[in-house]
Image (cartoon, rainbow, N blue to C red; front, top):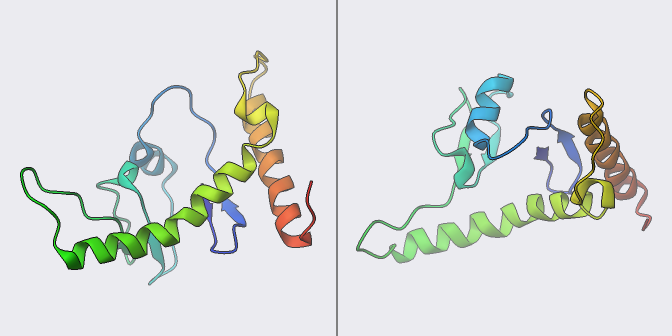
Length: 131
């Protein structure tokens, strides 16, 4: 899922079952980005580096050592920006059909449900109504 700072969702992948690494999904989707865009990633995208893109990802703590004050400050700034993405995900998951298990086995039904939930979320954001 890609979202903007105002919480609007601008892209979603197809849904995947089980524990599939975010990087593998991005590689499979073959995403292209405009030159110079900044991607704020979390640890799930470790190793994902598209061309002509600025990557902002929190520094990992080295084994047996602490992060420097500079790295801690950078991580704090990155986290304060990334929390907006997490809020967008959380707002989509308020819809019961998204957050709970459903037993429909129709082809692409789960993709359609998630797409509709994201569309409703974007409608709520753009119209500033509470659903």
